[in-house]
Image (cartoon, rainbow, N blue to C red; front, side, top):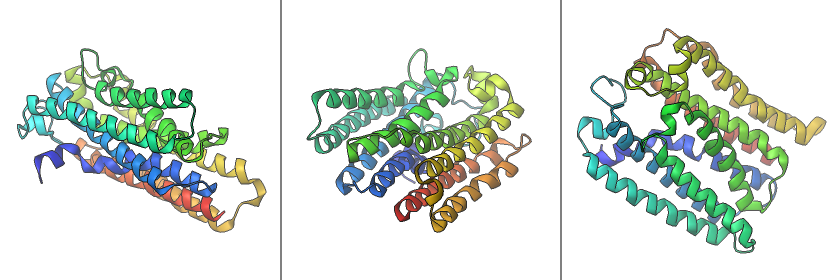
Length: 302
């Protein structure tokens, strides 16, 4: 595999676009949808996720987190496939590309919007870029202080879903916060698995993730809470919007989306090794995307 493709971590991209897919599907279900906005939002989000991955690779190497003790999911800078200076330059380049793509998205989707809306979304876009970089880069990366979970909930859940919905519809009804929150919680579940896998190395290196703070056993209980609480908001939204008028087929689709996630509640155990935990990052991301697709289809056929 090309070293830059490997450093971009393609397996993280399905989760990155999950909230964008959710926002687009909800907009489509409500009769307001533009394919160009959908495509631009997805491309911009992919660029931001790749930026985050490059910055994470650079930051963890510079701060000594990715060292010889890391044995699972080795990084490009750590293994010497890419030197630190090269990665720094590509981080800057990818940040610029992300910014330009975001501007293109806003120019197209906010043609009729006020300057206040424009400024708000411009600020939001800049915040996304800064959050992607500052997670592991700098003197005090917020990811090392256990704040990554909050950031992921906000950007991979609320901002991604509600922001995309607004770009499509120019409105944000309050009930959109329910599926947006569900997407955010399931995204945090993927991050928590990542932190559980890297627990011992993070502890030695001074990275105070949530599992480092509460321990492996409680970290797995936290994981199960995230998975369980992550599926509830989708049901709350469905009941709040449709009440007794819900379609049977739509209900079955949502239940079908729940099932693979519920299975993981039994499969994940504190006795698992880092190598055993690692495949569940991909599984959780793909199952989250599946739930969102099935939920979105259920809304469309409702």
